Image (cartoon, rainbow, N blue to C red; front, side):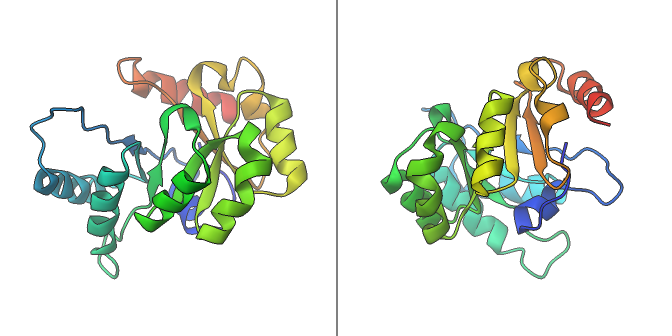
Length: 194
């Protein structure tokens, strides 16, 4: 569920009506028959299907998705943001810089990396979506004034009070794993966030 924020990513994730948005993780399994050209076509189809953002853990796929999305500038629907989502939401300064060079609009990072990577991401020109697992982690990011984009695991978003702790001007994304009845889960979380 997205609320507030002012970046391009924040605006893509927040509907003026307050309706839920859907972002998708593109994960091309090793050995996949999906070619780079197929991935570009998929990127176009997801944009036309009104995906709010695309997430990927592959720098190669990030570059393909970002290039295809940028082609839609000035079109309707326009490009959707592409987000680098490294394994365990963890990388180093070189990973942040590589993601930015590949065209990432944002990168997902664990809140514990705030002091070491927040400035690197700013210098690289990419937003950060802070992966938080507790209200203390969320408060640390808020207190440091290092962003208002938060990723929360679906199972914990309500249970540990993350949705309730989300600042009014922040954008909160809740991840729901494939196969866990995403539609019902999303609707239940939407009710809990109102």
